[in-house]
Amino acid sequence: MKFSGKKMAEKVYTHYTGYPGGQRFATPKELLATKPERIIELAVKRMLPKTKLGNALYTNLFVYAGQEHPHNAQQPKAIKLNTIKE
Picture (cartoon, rainbow, N blue to C red):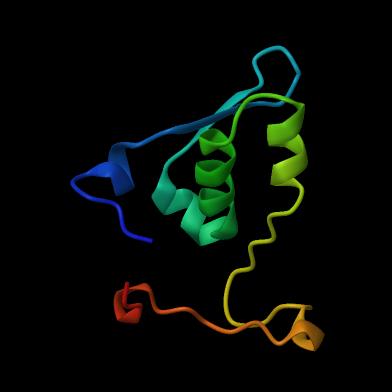
């Protein structure tokens, strides 16, 4: 993941807690320190359609910070996109 320009400090993620005055703001720098997987989840969720199908597709997404994950039985393989030949 790479942010261009000054997005690491100036981009703002907003969420609302549901309480009066509960609007919260966070920069990518703050999210990386606390919940690094949340940046990828938000990027993917916002690319999906805002329908029931988009919600169903989003449930298939699993993002983990670091190398450890509970899907070892499936033996996923890393794909290096710049080595794939067309």
